[in-house]
Length: 138
Image (cartoon, rainbow, N blue to C red; front, side, top):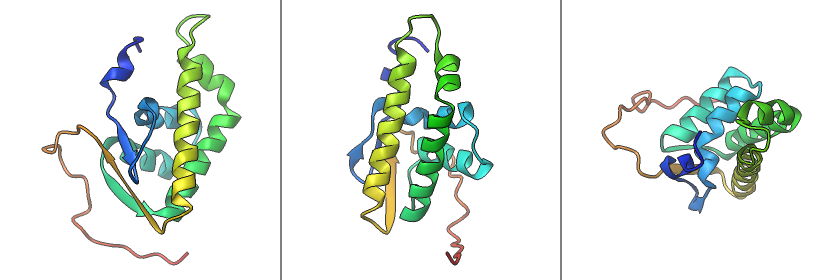
């Protein structure tokens, strides 16, 4: 990733809070750090489309990724590092942790959470399930 590549990222607003530039790359964090498939899929949806979800789900998915990043920090850092003195991996990791902490903190005060990814082409295909709602007992 070139030094100015963050300028091409789309901003994510989570319940009105602007997340750090590199929050759109949380799906990359999900690929670098071992996660259950359901968590990886949720993060791809978060970073690529607007959405709404139950706050408990948001908190759970953020905690799963946060824990995995902490456990695999050195491996993720090495994978992101382009040169020996590359500072960008530390910026990625810090931005990811800040974004996750922000989302957890906001979600703890709400029943549902919504987010938008600014600048997405509205003509992109809708991957929703046609509006059907599935309820689950927790």
